[in-house]
Amino acid sequence: MKILIVDDEELTRTGVISSIDWQALGIQEIFQADDGVHGLEIALREHPEIVLCDVRMPRMDGIAMFDQISGHFPDTTGIFMSGYSDKEYLMAAIKLKAVNYIEKPINKAELESTLQKAVALHAKKLRSQHVEVLHSRESGSRLAHLLTVPGESHLKEAMDLLEDLAIPPEECDTILTMLVQLDASADLSLPFVQEIISTLYKKLEKHSVHLLSETRRHQYLVFTFLSNGRLSQNILDESLAFLKEQLAHFSNYYITLGQSQNGLNNAHSSYEEAVILMQRCYFFDTGTILSSEEIEQSTVFDMDFSLPNESEFSKALNALTADHAAVFLQKLYQTFHENGHCLPNQVKDLYYKLFYTLEDARIQHQLLSHHDGDIAVSLVEKCFSYTELHRELSDRVNTYFHDLNEQSQENPTILLIKDYISQNFSKETLSVKEISEYVYLSTSYVCTFFKNETGKTLNQYITDFRIEKAKQLLDDPRYRISNISSKVGYSDGNYFGKIFKKHIGVSPSEFRERKSL
Image 1 (cartoon, helix red, strand yellow):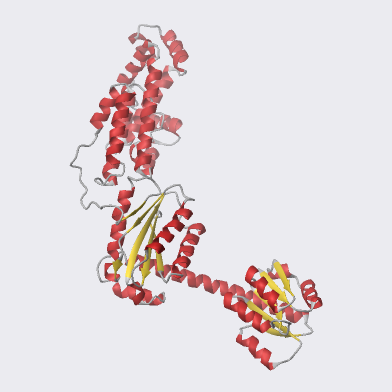
Image 2: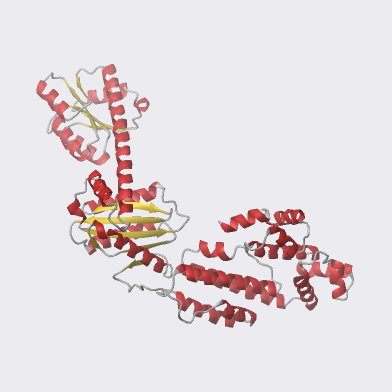
């Protein structure tokens, strides 16, 4: 907290400063001025919460100075000092809502008591302002929500909220909705986000435009602009420029604008247009701003055109050359990037299948997964944009061909052993002895040879292969965990659970639950 002491007598100022325990009052900064003019300059620069000033001073008296300070900072508390018991000054001080009027020579106990009252009054003002701000935000958020709902049943409540927010109905002729989507990891409750909203509110207020805001699903901000008459494009451009600058702190975001609508009855149409555009945004680069004027909206989403599919993808992967897969991926990206034909969920469903196709190819070619089962739904849903999703698939395809190339350099006997394991891993009786007989080598030699070539023992490799296959089966809710254990070579479900937890860190049921979140 700050205090400004203004008196033309230096001895008075220094005496006051040295006699009071300011830290005990919660006052950390003390400023001084020798007359009203200098006092006003310092107050405008430092914004003190308390002003302790003499009444009679050269150039500008304390009453005139504090009157101007109050005009800029209504919450500043004033305490007047004077050696004159003048009713005129006393009435002026009361009119300015000063805490007290102290006569000189100053009594230390009286000054301390008066300062304590000033500090308490300031705290009370802050609490009152906080309650008022919370109430205003709650009312504004509720009104913003109602203006996204079609129908007339809510109009009475909307009008009551307008009155509560002191927004005249005639200043709601034009209504426009702006929708902001942030990454799911963003915390919209942070003070930083609230500061963005408050600053934008103040910027628009200067243009006589009212702003309402609402948070949805922890990653969407709904802004509703209310104005009297047509909403200026310059105002929108300024708002967008400010938001882009602030949202640069977040790694991912999209902004969409619905068309301006006239009257509360039609407000929901602007919101609905912004929502439709937000679905389109998924296929654009992050940071994109879409408005109904800038892009032709497709009213019908269909899949009645040639799309790449998992069958083509499987053929490209099994061709065992990266070129075929690269062509497929390029065609895939060109089909969907900045497209207007599909809904995000339709494309996510396709990529869900493609990730599984890739995982199947890895298993078919005896390649263990390098991604701890983090595929399909969880992977698809965590991607903020289509470009990010496609990059994930491309990276994993590159890893697949890299691993294939490394595998091709393996000893033919090792490949034969791995192939046999991939065909027989579900047999509980699969053993090192059985494998050694299959490749016509002694058991001891096979164990030593496999460890030297791969860095793993045969039993380690078999267990890793089984656990990897179990993780894939756990992704499919059709399979019960007891059935999965037998499918990967464990007749004892409890033993399977222990082995699985030892390797993955969680039980099979916990693994499945996490994947379903």
